[in-house]
Every structure is written in structure tokens, then in C-alpha cells.
Image (cartoon, rainbow, N blue to C red; front, side, top):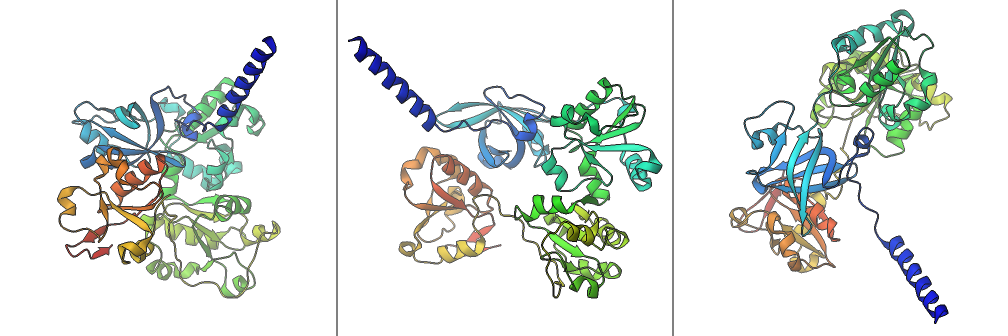
Length: 458
């Protein structure tokens, strides 16, 4: 009997181990950058504000690569923003897309309902601890030797590799204690830290650590990288360009500012000819500034030609413009891939699609087929007052707020394409259905449908 009981216990323990191994890992409640400085209590999310849809009482929170959809009741929702607002609706509207936030929520039957939203406030420092944009620009123009300063980027390495302030050294706040050897030996030297802007705590955290180590002239450039890129170009190394953009297939524009004959002997893949004397002509057909295309300008050594082109782009309203440190010579010295022939003459840029999206062209090809030939379910998540004016032939209509209550109407083994009128509700539906295990995509564009079922996509 004792042996039998022991066998039962062993089998039970084995089953428990198998169940634990099969159980899905809990989804992170905090974005990695938020976790650097904060812990997240149960019933809370930390991430970045995304789409807001007041008509459906919903908003999205980006937590790194995933998205959470939250409902809210405007009558009871508490919204705290840095600047006071007239009411909760006005406060929600004031939160910029991408702003760091914390959300308190309740959950019932798989639906998360926000009860409080806290937009991250700007950091507070004493006036003598703050370095202004003008001060940093003046120092960078002089250089570390003449300006007698040390500039440190407190952001994690992946962000630094996307572009940094010239002369800055990466000293990530999370790894500060392991890299104190990067700090100057002279504790009376001017030391400046910066990170991702007014609400980022990493550079103030670096300041606090530096002061504890005895540095007496440590400061923070509070406005950080966002303010710098609006007025100035940044820099990145060949290794950073490869790791941050090329290896990740991140769309960007590479401009080659060398003379045409020199550039034709060897250039970076996809590079576009950019004569420093003809930037105005280049800008006539350049990707729109509102698309925020990352731009890297290359010349022979990272010198005046690249600076001239980069400066013109910044003046034209482009952010995220960087110069390749050391130029083409540094790229060559690193034994990185080179192409020869004729450079492109026109810059093109197609933003990386949002996860789960389908292109208008692909959506159109499917939607124009007879319903039986599509092989997909077209799900229209608009409200009844919109769908009564016309729907795509054969489409299933379920208003987005009713989606979770009507899942039984969706075949679990079918591919689903969501659309609304603008793409915002369709994206909400995508995240909700993906969470439930559906094979789903969404149209991220405006679509107009008439009573015949014909449609146009803008």
C-alpha cells in the first residue's frame, strides 16, 4: 500500500510538472523601458498610450510588441495628466500617442476595464541640475576637449544604436553600476546625462548615482533625444546602422553625399545620391516628413558634406536624421557589405506595417472576389448606423463593442479580415480576436462603402 501511495504521489508530481511546463508564460504587464525604473502591481499595466476611440469607450496600450485593449466608463474613469483638464474626456484627448502611462483596471469575463489612467509627468530637478538644449548644442559644437564636458546617453543600447547626440557615450542607466569606469576620473568635471525626454527617469537616475559617487558638476539634459532631433542631426556607427536597421529590416533612407564618380565605386545597399548643393531638388520628391523616415547620411568620412545634407533635412522638418560616423571609409574598414553601379536618384520610404495589418491592395484583391471564393471572413466592425449605408458583399457585421459577446458567430477555423471606416476599430478588433486565438488581420486604412457593396480605400 505504501509503495502504491508513493507511486501515486510521484505520478501526481510529474503531472504537475508537465502542466506547469505546458502553461503559457504570463504576459508582461509592463513595457521593458518602464520596468527599468518601476515595478507594476497586480491590476495595473505600464506602457505607451496608443489609439483612443471615444465612440467605443476604448483605448489601446502598447506594451513593447503587444497591445492591450481596455474599455472605460467615462462617468467613473479617473484620468490624471501633467496639465489639469476640464474633465476625463479632455484629459484622455490630451495624452499624446506614445506617452508613457500607467493604467489601473478591473477584469471580468476577459474584458479589461480601466478605472484610472495616469499619464507620466515630467521629471523634477533643481534648476542647477538642468542643462538646456542651447547649452548642449553649444558644447557639442565645441567638442569635448574644447568644451571640457562629458556627455552620456542613459538609454539602453538598442535605442543608442538608432542614433545619438554627437560626442555622446552610451552609459545605460540599467547597467550604470557596471560601467562607472566610463565616467571621468575628475569628479569636478562637467558631466551631462540625457535619455528619452521630459518624462524619462533614466538620466535623472544616472544623475543621482553620479552625485553619490562624488561628481559635483553633474547635470541632466531633461528634454533629451526628442528635443535634440527636432533641431539637430544625430550620429550612429557602422555597427549600429547594421544592428539597429539593416539586420532588423527596419525601413530607412540612406543618402550618399559623395561625388557621383566616387560613390559609384562602392556604396551602401539602397543608397540614394544626395548632392549637398542640390538638397532642395532632392526634397521635392522626398518621403513626407510626417512619415518620420529614419535617414542616414553618408559621405567619405562623416564630414562636411554629410553635415550639410543632414542640416538641410532637419531644417525641412525631418526628425531622426543621422550621420554615419566615420563615413564610407569606416563602413569599408568594418568589412561591411558594399554594392557598385549606379545609385538611386529618388528616395522612397514605406513605413513598417503595424502588426496584424493587411495592405489595401491585398484586402481589395480578396474583397472583390465572390464571397465563396475568398477563403476568408470579412468582418465589418462598424456600428449599425454606418453599415446600413452599405457593406461589402458577404461581409459579417458585428460592432466592435459587441465582439467578445458574439464570438460564437465567428468560425474559429477561418481566417478573418477586420475593417471599420478608418482602421482604428478594426485594429481594436484584431487585438481582441488574436487574444482569443483567431487567425485575424485588419485593414489599417479609411474605406468608404456604398449600398451596392462597392468600396474605395484611401
